[in-house]
Amino acid sequence: MSYLSAALTLFLVMDPLGNVPLVAALLKDVEPGRRPRIIVREHLIALGLLLLALLAGPPLLGVLGIHRPALTIGGGVVLLLIAIRMIFPGKGGVFGDDGMDGEPLVVPLATPLIAGPSAMAALMLLRTQAPEGFGLWFGALGTAWVASLAILLGAAWMSRHVGPRATIALERLMGMILVLISVEMLLTGVGEYVEAL
Image (tube, rainbow, N blue to C red):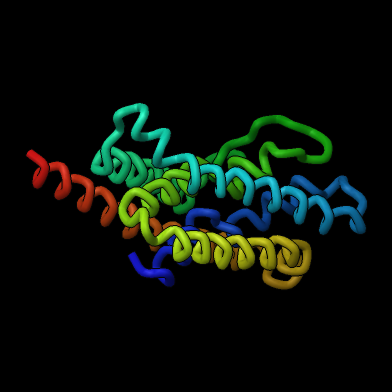
């Protein structure tokens, strides 16, 4: 996977456009001047979690005896489930309603909205596919993270100017693209498993 395709995959998995209405809802009772600080703080926490997955994920998988085809297929399944929920959202959006009130801290904004299991699985998969390309995957993560931060910092503006219908349409379009990426991951994992037999 190239730098551009890795950054695009991570960006789609983080789903910042789909998170705009969720962030707006989570922060609606927070003082407007505090909202950017909360978004930056939550993004920094999410970046720490994603870097941990990138650095410690592959060694942990080795200890657990999980091989690359299993990770590829598992990541594809998780991506597919999230993509389907992006296209056909249920109550509470892609990740459901956890019933939490007040200012978010770590959950649900940093994780699972930004640094979700699918983003962590994608990073671990990239690292196991090409361990020597750590700098490349780190750069792809940084690009996707900066784009997500920029979009969510503009969440209030987007909610006012783009409108809910356009936001929903963008989320569903991103879901369709993510379906294709997840199916490709599944086919790759199955192919790798068959070759290993």
